[in-house]
Length: 181
Image 1 (tube, helix red, strand yellow):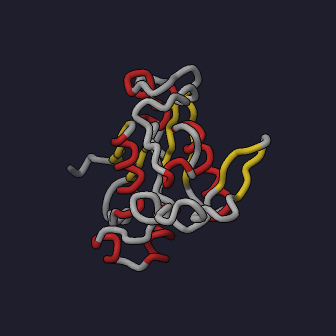
Image 2: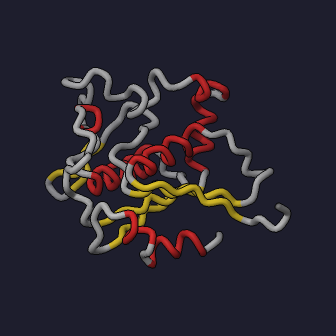
Image 3: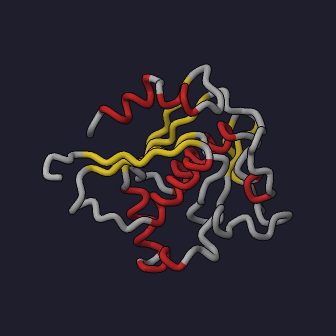
């Protein structure tokens, strides 16, 4: 496909979880392939790159001082990189994080996705926030705090909850899909 210029991986809800984790774990060589974009939309939880966690409280993002206090496996895969799958070990931990942070990732979230229907309610996921929208803000803030040189973006869709049809028909999604770098 010599005319192929761009590949966009997108997933909503559980598909969004898959896309975010795939973006961390994949070894796609961006020098060989065309522009590659990852768009996790409204996932229930995120894969964190280190042991730190942040939550929005009292109108500010606060670092959780001891996230493992009542949740021993909060940093185990699928929420963190401990006990990650074998294919994650094909490159070093440091290289994998460096590559993930350099990838074109846009977190696309419905601003009204704040219900708990079908939401991962494990202690590991609850450390990430009370609902999907809050978890996305917490993860994005975590990236800003822990890895200030990332190449990721956050877009919210006003007035939309956990609805893939409204997300994928939004002007925000169309900007991501049809606006190459």
